[in-house]
Image 1 (cartoon, rainbow, N blue to C red):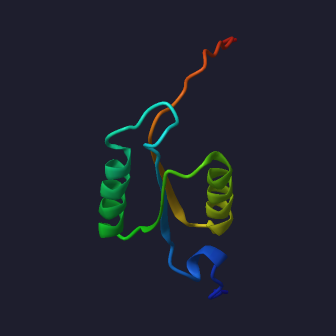
Image 2 (image 1 turned 180 degrees about the horizontal axis):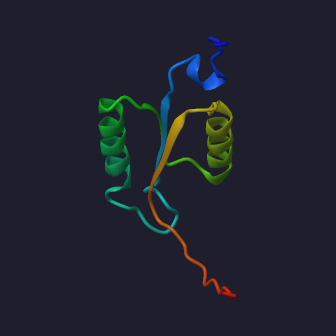
Length: 98
């Protein structure tokens, strides 16, 4: 006995979604290349079929909403990519390995 049942993920084409963030305008410094890097990455991703959401220099609260909105737009089976260009901070992390 055979069936023609399809799963939810095969009923529609998989989307390729990308969130590209470029932050170069900080209170204490200006980064030269963050915005250009974000533009270049967006262009490259679009050229291979990604639907790109690009945001430049969002403030902290705006960035929270951007991340939430992007997360909520993702559907089962989507391929997602997150790209960030800007300053980062690293905290010391200690781990115990058993």
